Length: 233
Ligand code: ATP
Image 1 (spheres, rainbow, N blue to C red):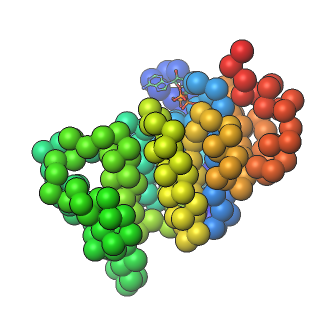
Image 2 (cartoon, rainbow, N blue to C red; image 1 turned 30 degrees about the horizontal axis):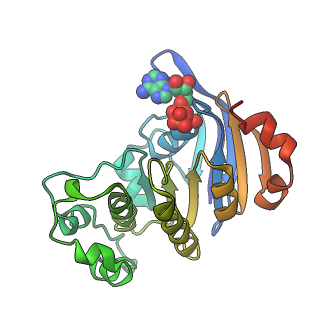
């Protein structure tokens, strides 16, 4: 469903991704792991067209998308949850969802505001509250829900647990498991334990490249690789 092929992404003249490759099959949940600065966020932003790669190819569902503007990539069916959540202040929870609503012509609208409120009653209870006044965990639920309003076939979640209390992290884990039943997901996380629990496969990044790929089960039982690429000591 998604193929990232030899992408090179720059910030100005500084090279952040240097020939990064990975692919994701329809229906999979995969995680990108790596130390700070390895290039996880830049990879998601490159797929989304926010930091378009200068070289390389990205194919989603048969469409070549490297160089396509972000709003068109979203309309092809890629939902993106940025690390900093970007709730629209001054808009209520309902309005934050309404502004994102999109239905691809000729396809049924799987996610409506009513369905979001039915399934995530916590958001229904907050429907009329200003999005900016929500707690970190509530904002993260809202950002994920907002990304569903474009009817994504692929969801990109950038560090969904960043700054959240352990009890909320558990809820986010359940949400990833639930959404992963019908949607392909790529997420990044700092916690190897969390990532391997909720993803089927993992890609480890270092210095802007994928340096290791394994099933979660294999990586869980491979402390040497974890130490080599992921320990912070
Ligand atoms: P973290 O977990 O710290 O977010 P990451 O693996 O997501 O790390 P990126 O944020 O993608 O890594 O960063 C990859 C490289 O690009 C790093 O060297 C980083 O310093 C650089 N970088 C990231 N954002 C910018 C920016 N806005 N301008 C310049 N360089 C940047």
